[in-house]
Image (cartoon, rainbow, N blue to C red; front, side, top):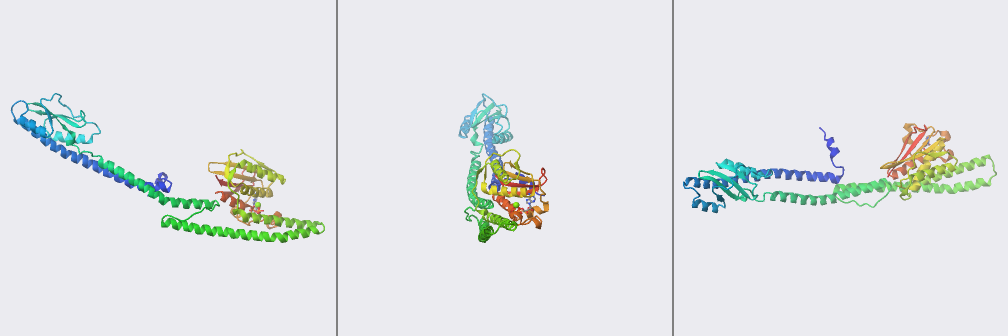
Length: 439
Ligand SMILES: Nc1ncnc2c1ncn2[C@@H]1O[C@H](COP(=O)(O)OP(=O)(O)OP(=O)(O)O)[C@@H](O)[C@H]1O
Ligand SMILES: [Mg+2]
């Protein structure tokens, strides 16, 4: 048997779960103790006290009956006084039925015990006065009215233990909550640091808390350092190579421009320009981590700008669908680069290109669609890896393509807490690239 259905109702946060684990035993213990206590205390103690009083009343009753004169003998009056029982004979207002408030639990026991132990009771009234018990006894000389304090039969302040228990339970829960909060805080800080790192920020973090949390924190720090070092090495290497290649390339270009114009020279110059474009892409890729900062951006503006840029280069790119004008926290320059990469791919492979944008509660999605050949599903994963070109060998290295466009777009999406999704465009038949970004 599994308890998976329980999970649906269980609190999601660690705080909530810990609170549940803490409160369940406290409340159960309180309930059990309360029930047992109420039973024992109300029932047993009240019963014993009532039985004692019944004995005294019975003694009074017997004294009156054994005396043959009418009226109450002086000895009995003195006795009743000593027992703090008020007597009236004959009773001016005889009680004919048992009366108690419905929530008066000990009252039920008082009535039951008196009825059992005192023959000749006509009625017991617990309502007339909350602190007094009124009852009428049938005796040979006539109805005898008796009145005595309720406190002689009910345990006084029976709720004290309950109040104390609830109070202490509450106090303990509050203290436990405070401790718990201190235990959970390091876990939350670790989660925040990990989440921020996933989005490309390196927030200050120092392991703290219980040993296990500390261990996880140290492991996270080690991992973060290693990843940062690797990224740094990648950056240094790529920018070093690009930078070093640029100088001879510039010299080459200068040399070529000195030569006579001819088809060969033009071709060579074109190649050199392609190489420059490739170096630019390398540098872009290398610098991915020094992204611009997050700011409020209107998605529709970003789409328009991307479409306009492609338009200037002579391509037909249109923005479709309703314009999303809600500002979203994004890195505009990085995103512009990601969109440009997708649009460049689209214009390279297709003739009709459509851009659109959708926004939801948690994400904003930029979509680039074209009517080109698309990418077969098996190759989509591979297409997003760095330095991967799927085009056949013939067209490789044409137009400065190095196979970084999609992986740069994917990196940028990840740094926005999102991803890049490739699919087949339903409308145009080519590739559909969704840049999904967390809001
Ligand atoms: N819109 C598209 N339609 C068809 N194939 C595509 C499309 N976009 C990308 N591809 C395929 O995916 C491969 C990887 O694309 P990516 O943008 O990463 O590199 P690239 O375009 O070849 O080079 P770069 O963008 O760096 O100039 C491309 O070589 C191409 O084969
Ligand atoms: Mg590309």
